Amino acid sequence: MSGPTQTEALARATLESRLAALAAIAVRHDEPLAPHTSMGVGGPARWFIEVEERGALAHLLALLGEAGVAWTMLGGGSNTLFEDRGFEGAVVHLGKGFRFIEADPAQPELIHTGSGALLSAAMNFAKRRGLSGLEFGAGIPGTLGGALAGNSGAGGADICSLAESVEVLDEDGAERTLARGEFGFSYRKSGLAGRIILAARLRLAPASREEIETAIQAHLAKRMEQPIGDRSSGCMFKNPPGEYAGRLIDAAGLKGLQVGGISVSNTHANFMINEGGGTAQEIRQLMEEVRRRVQEESGFELEAEVRWVRPSD
Ligand code: EPU
Image (cartoon, rainbow, N blue to C red):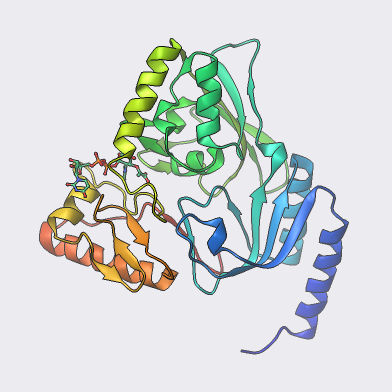
């Protein structure tokens, strides 16, 4: 491989000095991505940048844009996979200033949540206030931003259905509030994917704490049917219309199928487990093999639910 040209080296040095001058960001170089994802795979990111507040985020993205550096947002890393060669660009992670969860005094059924807040933290906040709707988030790892981008859900409920409005940062650095109806969503899909999500207002419903706690326990009991203690990315494939990916993979006899350090879970067939030392390449191979064999056995085409970030994304 050839090294950077003189012009590229100069552009990089300029970017480095401009990054160093930005307040409220922390930059790490050649940061391994595996520890930032629940599956524990992925090579290094050229830059891993933690941003503490909105103004800094807009500045940062403008700088990266001017320098022609690819970037991607990373939330909790529980549904995202990076390649073994890593990400030749900037991985942007939202810090403290994006983790707020607050009540709206004027509208007690709404909560205002930063995109960096954990879904489970928002659920607990709502429970304390006697607000129901987020119980499906019990046991789901990840941040509100990631949940909105992929329309996370469980048991028929999902996060986008609760979003009254979503604040995003546009490409030109302007903040916009999208009202319900201004972004589309469907099962595990959201028009917010690829946008920079800052915060959302979630509309919940009053309920007793006992009712909320009972619903949370029911969701947690369901999670016990999943390999929650293992290194996974949750469900790997979306459920095809009218079917369940887990049932199809199981029926095709693929539980326990292994490529290198990655295996199809014996507990729930739509999960893959990093048994230790697994790689992104092995996940790709196993996903391909599972897709091929499910297609052969049942005719169903499985679509990935996890988000793959390519080096050039
Ligand atoms: N099944 C099998 N074998 C298995 C796994 C499941 O036969 O190994 C069967 C089950 O018996 C059931 C059906 O498949 O009849 C569906 O299984 P389950 O009830 O576990 O739900 P799921 O559709 O596989 C969905 C979400 C989960 C969420 C659960 C609980 C998707 C792709 N998955 O799973 O979300 O936790 O419901 O509500 O929609 C995730 O998105 O990462 C995730 C884990």
